[in-house]
Image (cartoon, rainbow, N blue to C red; front, side, top):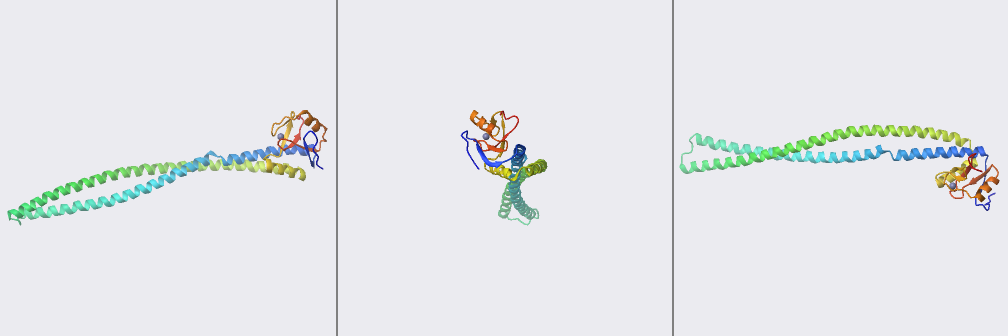
Length: 259
Ligand SMILES: [Zn+2]
């Protein structure tokens, strides 16, 4: 039967020995430990760092693709310019050969040929300049590619180290979680079923299921009990399960309760 005394402390229908109630404090400690481990696992700095490293790695990959594409375009442009230079050179050689062989004797034809050679030489000079420019741009791109590749390699090493550190941290958390879970199962097995059910219900809705009453204060929400409440608790049988009126946790009486 449930009744709410004037003091405001709700006494539940569940009754349990003081020893069983004390076990709830162990359970609450282990639940807090498990929650702390879960929080640590979610907030591992290595996980955030790995996300950052992966983002940078993806940026580098894109930049390398762009550089490789530019190098390919430049290579084709250079080949074309070199072929043009060769063609002009061939024509100059052919014209010169005709001149040297004395095949051209008419003054007008001679002048035309000489002027063609001159203009071909200018064209050759322009084209060679273009080839030089392309070669310089190529050098710049190759050194950029080298820098990007070197950073990618460094990033690869850093990512591998960070992954190992994350895995080690997760392994440690897993081990501690398994240990705390085992301990929790052992303690829970010693708590009567109805008391455990009540504890779990409160824990599901409040996050924590039980707290100690220490020096007249609820350790869960730090509410200090008034004299009426304390008198009510003093008058309660040891097997009454008391709940804090403020935070609704099961309030476990201990030798330090100040009763
Ligand atoms: Zn409380």
